[in-house]
Image (cartoon, rainbow, N blue to C red; front, side):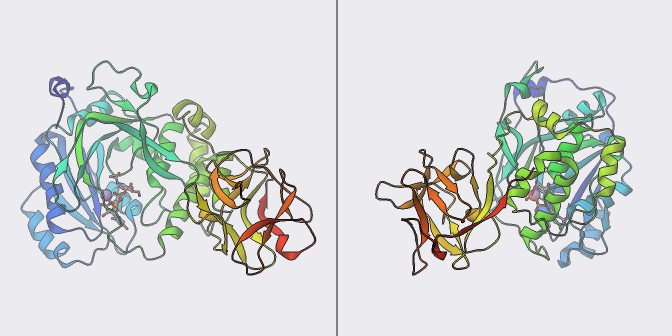
Amino acid sequence: MRSESCKRAVYSDNLPDTSVIICFHNEAWSVLLRTVHSILNRSPERLLKEIILVDDYSDMEHLGKPLEDYVAKLGKVKIVRTEKREGLVRARILGYGVAKGTVLTFLDSHIECYPGWLKPLLDRIAKDNTTVVAPTIGMINEKSFSSHCSEPSSVGIFHIKDMTFNWGSITDRARAGRKTSADPYKTPTIAGGLFSISKAYFTHIGTYDSGMDIWGGENLEISFRVWMCGGSLEISPCSKVSHIFRKKSPYKWGKSYNEILRKNSVRLAEVWLDEYKHYYYERLMYRLGDYGDVSERKALRERLKCKSFKWYIENVFPELDLPKRGIYTGEIRSLAAPLCIDSMSPRRRSDIRPIHCHGMGGNQFWSLLDTGEVQRDNICIEVSDTQKIIFNTCSGTKWSYTEDKHMVHKQTNKCLELTSDTRNVVLADCRLYKNQEWQWGRKREE
Ligand code: UD2
Ligand code: MN
């Protein structure tokens, strides 16, 4: 799986050892053991201190006594269990609490490590213990379980509108300072599941935010925190680990997916995003929900004297595509019926229709820019040649929002009107009429 240059790479003789921490909730037997055996078989004996399996309150039978009996024969592998369902952040913190290695290596429970995977990670940390290193992540097919790993083709990035992790193209900045193709790339974020970090440094920078539940957000949180507080993130092209990427989450979440993800993401935005949090909050229509207390995490940021998010964007991720902020944002709600302007699809060339207001943003989130365009993600509410209202490529259609709550189409001086059967919106001569009155979600203040 490695390139020739990786096979030739020379690592320090004096590498620190690592505790591998794998948390899981209801993982399949063969998949979990594939993970464990690939580590045992493909890590130098001296460098692997232990494998800590953190069972996050699974209820599958094979993960109880059968797993204990099985790992007892393997040496190095121990199991710790949470007392209730905690989610991956608190499960990882539990594993960290019992770990004895100099370095912590976090892995998901459905992966395979390839020969040579460990030394390139530890070597970077031996050189500088504020470096956090992720392997190159390959794919294990979720149906056939065959696996594949190639050269790194991307680095980690994120989208600010929904605070999601994504892969992005490798920039010149990421390549800076590399001498051979075995050298690591700098990355703005890490995917979150697979990485090594010095235990002392993990402690120093405040482990994880234990207020985060089940899944999500912790990957961006640790990414921003490491960069802003003096460390760095990299991807090693020579360390190869593949992972099962699944189309949907296989386990129960308790509360709704949206609610949990929003809580975790708002916690991280409150602490780390400074004024940039508004890009995200706007899309949430400022419905932040109950995200708990973040004062300890803010105090941590103070104590560590971390840099601003602006610094992070300018220096670590200048490619970030910042959305345009509108004068008015949020839903465009009819005052004649509980209906909101909806694009029906996030893609261009879809219909604009009045739909029951769902309050979730999504296809009902709009921005009225100071140019007069009404848009979302650079796609506009347009008026076609036949005066149909459509969601399409911005071509200069301008609107203004008046004191009497009209949405006036500037080119024709006509008003957006809800048809009397409430099934459509059309342009009509402006007049005092409830079906021409619209309420925008929010006027920009900050
Ligand atoms: C990615 C990361 C994952 C984590 C997540 C965001 C990779 C390859 N994976 O999603 O590690 O950063 O983004 O949060 O980068 N688990 C528990 N308790 C729970 C839920 C999950 O122990 O309540 C375990 C789960 O069994 C797995 C790990 O946490 O071993 C990550 O969960 P996932 O595999 O569902 O996340 P993934 O890969 O979709
Ligand atoms: Mn996973």
